[in-house]
Amino acid sequence: MEVQSIGKFGESGYRVTAQVVLGATVPPEGMGRLFDCLSCAASGVAEVANLIHQREGGASIVMTESGAGPVGCVATKEGRVWVISARPSLRLAQAA
Image (cartoon, rainbow, N blue to C red; front, side, top):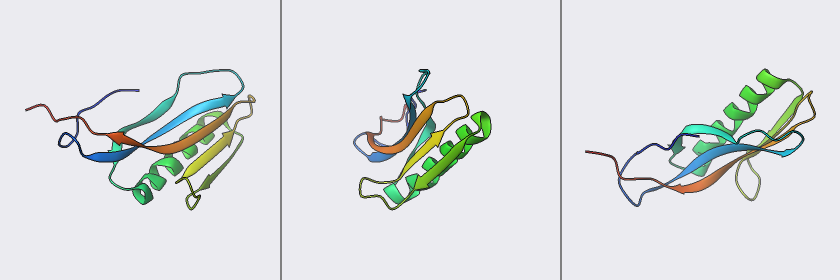
């Protein structure tokens, strides 16, 4: 996953990440941008879940109203289970 500089130092946002929790391990995946609010990050969770589902097949579900924030799950045909979530992240200072 790439690190990018966005916004002013100290601003917070939400980063969407996906990782395998069951099955053959692969590196975590994520979006290269931060979302301003948790409800905005829900669209990112849905987008990443959909991309993994299209790429690997299987079944997917996204819950945008869970108590811990949006979360997605993809169970692939190859037996992997991915969990996609939005987590708080600190934005880095933008290079001048």
